[in-house]
Image (cartoon, rainbow, N blue to C red; front, side, top):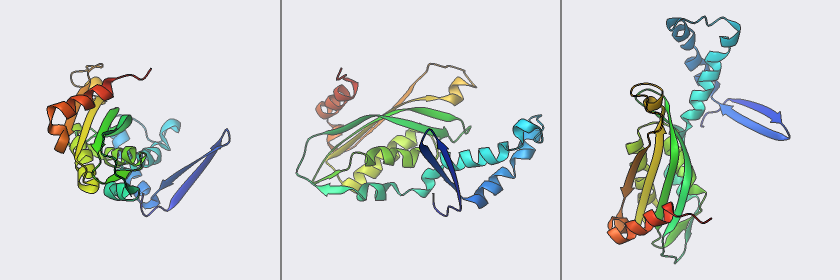
Length: 210
């Protein structure tokens, strides 16, 4: 995130985890949570909840850090001229996001393809673009379109395909309480609007290499 003023280092089993936070924002967000805890009938001063406001504030900063990421710049940082013109598919990209209606998680997988038109991009950048948009308050439909549009407008390929499959906790934990439902969204540009090309993409993301 930008304007980071606090660092926490945690070493465990030889692995150093570094979390970065804007301490001013942490303090502001945390200041609201004692009142929220009281409103739901809890005691914010009991031992298990004393540090909860700060923990929630840090979690929210991490879960929404996509607002500080320029997804197009992520792609531009690893664009290369290449005469490859066949489909490039990156599938089973993990998604973790938060529904903007209830601020509950939704999660699943994205399958993304593009057909280069003079440029390719480093493969790790496509999952990073997914994270840049997923780590915001979202709806799955808009998330699908934002990923498609960013890739199309930045790489200017012959076509982009995005298919997303997610489970929504706002459906599983509350409301209709359907734990096993999966929501699928899709978005296509260019060559993928052709039935043959789109069918090839669907075949590739559903095929197993085992």
